Structures are given as structure tokens and as C-alpha cells.
Image (tube, rainbow, N blue to C red):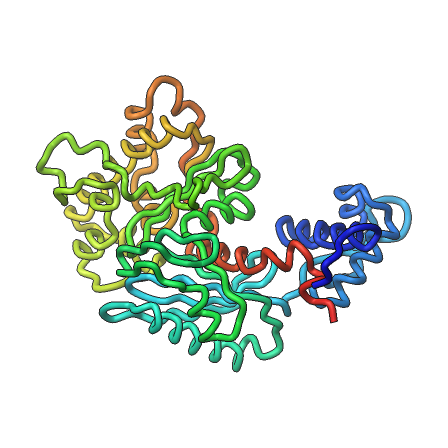
Length: 390
């Protein structure tokens, strides 16, 4: 990448990045729409679109007339450029190929039996990448690899603590680079979930939101405040699973002595009552929705009570406009959404709960793969010419 970004060349590359980001986040648009939204003139937008096409990042097709005059061509992101997305969990390692525009082209889920060591996780990813390259990605250009990790992750991709995986001080991004030969980055899974639900999903355009992700490793969270991710000084903010669970006044309701949120609202408990050894998010949600077992209904009611009351405390502290629930938490919410909101309102102070929306993650099972890919796409979106030129 050239060192200098100043002058006319710097402005051109910044405009190119701006145009690609618009297409990536907001979807297909006409040249006329891009001209209006960027404030650039038509010839400049035409030249930038042509360069994005040359780089393999965009495709242009004939449009329809918006008014008197010639039709404005339509522009969309191309499918050929992809990121590899990785989500290691206690029950499976999922690897996906994600294109611009948050489109998941393919995924491979490799179930885990026993302990998942970091080296084994990296080798599992390498095997999946080789399979993807031999199949759906044989004509694609891979620009990076992103990992969404259920734990505390530094900005350099170093996993400080992922208790459910049993990882401490693991240079996971480095391990992935060595195993796959692809530039790799890593971050906390729920933080990435919050970012992409704001960009593409249930909280699109919302500047103040809380996101909770429920997975096999427990409950993680992410916060967007004033339109910016709230990460904390070391990048570890949002670990809501490790805060004290609310709504447990009766000791007989407790599942654990520790009493943290992820101890009391648990995916494993739902699987146990359903009689399932394992299930992905879709399978678990369908099984819960179809079950007529009274024990399942009782447990869902208990988890709704704890989740709603705990959300009340979180909302009191952070005052979000929207709360997004992902993973198995979306299924718990779906079993009685009004109950969750009522519990939240009872636990929050004063008018804090007024107007708060509690919604399921719109990206569903794709959200962590899309989040990991967004991490991998960051360099490309910042400087497409620098990353792909030549």
C-alpha cells in the first residue's frame, strides 16, 4: 500500500472507499443515487464505479429511467471478493465464506468432541478453508480472515481469556494466519454481533443499543453508545453473562451457587430438558417452538423472568433505545416476548424502560460470521485501491 494518501490521489482513494462502503452497507443503488448521497459530480462517480469494477468489487447493470432522460445504471457489490469468517465454540467450529453486502456464500460446521485446543481449532479452520477453495471459492479472491471468539480478545487478536473454551493468553489470530496463510484478525463475538446488527440487522441505524448473544459458551454482550462501539479501555466491555442475575428471589429457582446471568439462563439446560445432545441455533429454536412438554414451558418461563429482570438492570445502567437478542436468547424471547418486556419494565428504574424495544437479531445464525467478516473487510473498506490494486 502506498505510504502517501495526500493530495488528489488521497482524495480519489478516500472517495473510492466511501462509495464501496455505501454499496456494502446499504445495498444496490443507481449511479444517480450514489451521486446524490456522496455529493460528488456524475463524472466522478462514473469514474469511481469503473475503478471498483476493474478491481472486481462492483458490477454495473442497465437501469430504468427515474425521470426524463437516460436510465441511470445500477451498481452493486460483486460476489468474487470474500472474507473467511470463523466462530470457534465449545460444540463446533464454524467457518464461512462471506461476501460484501453481508452475504454468506457457504459455511462448514465441524462439531467438537471434548476439549477444543487452539492449535486444533486453527487446523480445523485450515481444512475448511481448503475445502471451500476447492469448491465454492475456487474463483474467488480471499481478502482476509476474521474470527469471532467467545472471550476477551485484545485488538491484536490475542485471546486473553475464553473460559468456556479453556483458552488463556492464546495468539489465536497468529495461529490462524500460520495455518491458513491468510491475514487474520480476531475480536469478541458479541461485540461484532452488536456492530453488524446495527449496520445490517435489527438495530439498523440505531445509535444506542445493547446486544446480548447466547451461545454454547454462555452469554456475551456488546454495546453501541452514541453510534460508536463501547469497548472499554482494554476492549473487554459488554460481558453481561458475568454480571449477577436478577429475578431470582426464591433460592429454589437458582441453578447455581454463583448466580451469574449465564449460569441461570443456559442453553445447555434447554437442550437437557428437550433431550438433545447438540443442536445448532435453528434446530434448537424449532425444537423449543414445537415442544408441548410442560417442563420445557416451565424452564422457558424461568429463563424469561431472569433474562427480563437482568435486562432491566442493564438498561438502567446504559439507557439503550434497542436491545437485540441473538442465539438461544432469541428463542427464549420468542417464547414470550411480552413477558420479557414486562420483566424488564418492572426491574428498570423510573422512565428508563419507556420506549425500549427488545428484538431478536435479524441476521439470525449468520450474525457472528457476518461480524467476523466485517472485521476482515475493514482494511479493504478503508482503502480498496491499496488492498487490491494490481
